[in-house]
Image 1: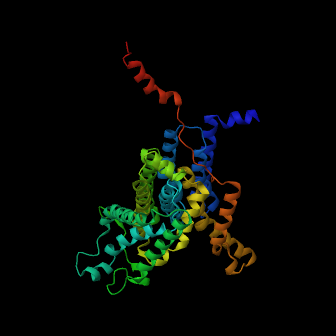
Image 2: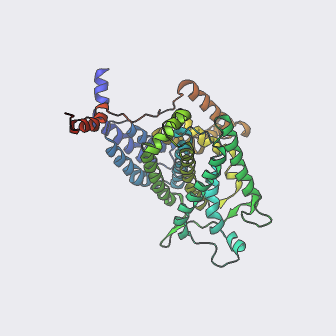
Image 3: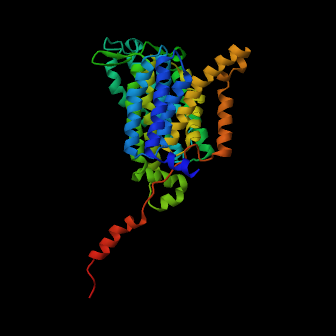
Length: 416
């Protein structure tokens, strides 16, 4: 057993195992017509990388190489490239949204059941101006805007979502717990119903029919239409989101969120402004969802209110709880598992069961999302209440904290 432990902690051994997994799974994805197992193993190499003993910088560099080079290259040789990359794109979008909700729920401790509303706001912000419907709405030949405006609308969508996050946060500051959950749930449904009925007296969102033919993202005449192209946009935005979350987590604001989460009264007694701290959580969390809403609209080239139901909010919340509230790597893992489960595993399992046993459509695993989410929540609550990767506080060396104090005392002039 000791010999096995020494092998597992050996960095060369870890590199060998990681390289073997990447090469075999990548070759399976590249050469086989469609191999879900190989694709999942290729993605699992990122999880294996997380548990290695390399420094954080080395881990980030290897992960960057896997995401930017290996995965696109491995999928490029397969006829199922678009299916693989669609899963990767959807996973990236949900990870960004889950990280945004993690700020509100995990860091600040504010239960939000209407988070998908900010996703809808971002999506409609771009769709209204970049679809042919804009020409009728504004009676101008300037519209619809071309796909080159997509890059600016990423910021605009995030900004509008942040504004609505603040507007939601102001009236709910006086409630918490179950009451906060009910209010946010109502907000999410109100936004969806407003978009569903905003086709009269002035037709802004085209109501239940939705907005179609939305312009895809464009850069110097190159259109990002297919999943393997949009993948790099999602990857770039996700990188910025993760960097921002990691920076803010250990900042003064991040520590204030955690203090408010643990005890509001104690936090206020320590001088933390509750109102401003909570509003920042709502605004920053909502902005991540809003900018990914713009990406979603450009990718789908169609949005309608049915894409932003309560089930989507619940799904994102399950991702956060499964991974570990307040844990950035945990939330990334939780969002990846739930998204891949929805898009890949349940679909493949349904197809396999139908070929083997002719399972009725009503009993297919793909139709049992809600039941599976319930089972996941119960199992996590019983066996892993802190999530798959629990949140860790940054370790602090007490001796280093005392250094400035000791230095100040040493330099202080002694009294005669």
